[in-house]
Image (cartoon, rainbow, N blue to C red; front, side):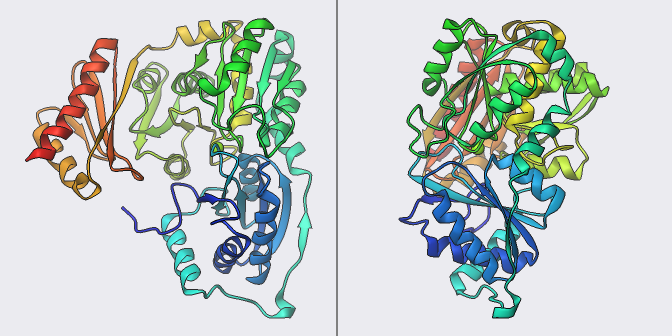
Length: 451
Ligand code: MG
């Protein structure tokens, strides 16, 4: 566990212009710039507060001696792509799927991967000590704009799939960008691939009038109805900063992120004749089943997309992802990439000449169950240790929380990082077993809380 004071799992997210003020943003960016000392790209999402925070971030970077390249409004993975190819660092102004009143700042390294914990702690130290490095007047560099990145990013995504096969399939796709950064990419990408595109919520708007930025089933009811009523082949939705893709099948069914992950994994392994897959301990066993069938190998990290991205880079992995629909193609971008995910899914449908529901139906099927239970923060460590000891007759993984495997399935018991609760997530072939496993997880917490 780290003792970070400002940074969460990926960046700083706060109430815009209340906590995340221009002063806050500028000082934080100056601390980051002090460590980077080079050319830093800055981009952001469509929130009303993004220009305000972006200009403060640019000031901070300039004051610490960095050169700044303003990339404009664009998806998080497009910034990560640009930094990896052209710059020494990057700052992304976004609060991802949070509500419109929030905003956030994400820092990436020269590979476009979110910066490590040690660097975040150094930035915090400088922030609280009020001592970021400030350069003299004659060391202040320039601000350039680069408005070509979006087109280049879309072109590079298109070059990674079989355009001819997708064109021939003539797919009808309804796209819901939730008024976020994907407005500038996904509709153009799909048209470039020869799809018939119907857009909704595809005008960038910081008030997010159409739907909440988080692409959950509840928030995507308009898209679900549109796919059904228009007889489309599929629906595509993104979160605010366009690093996640959620699919709706041709019947209007919401496709859970772990299914999309498994589907793309299968075809990545087939195309490449096997390879290393990286995911987290909380992801479906389907990922392992597919790897076994198609010459893949799976490594599981602690929960968090940054950890998956770093492991992919270190181990030269083929593909990775999380159960929430965030898929990582490390050869292109070291982070979740909604555009390449979208292109891959239409490519699979086109080349297999099967509907999305059929393709999903062919994947290994598991049932999952989620529960939570209260536990004071200061007891969490001890409860986890006791549970691990009490269940040592089973196979137990303590990489992140306690994951216990039985003949029926598995349950993972993880402490929340923000609330005094444990989350229990269970998976089994049969629904009743998944429920039983989740309840067992809860009972283990309650039992070991008492002692
Ligand atoms: Mg996001």
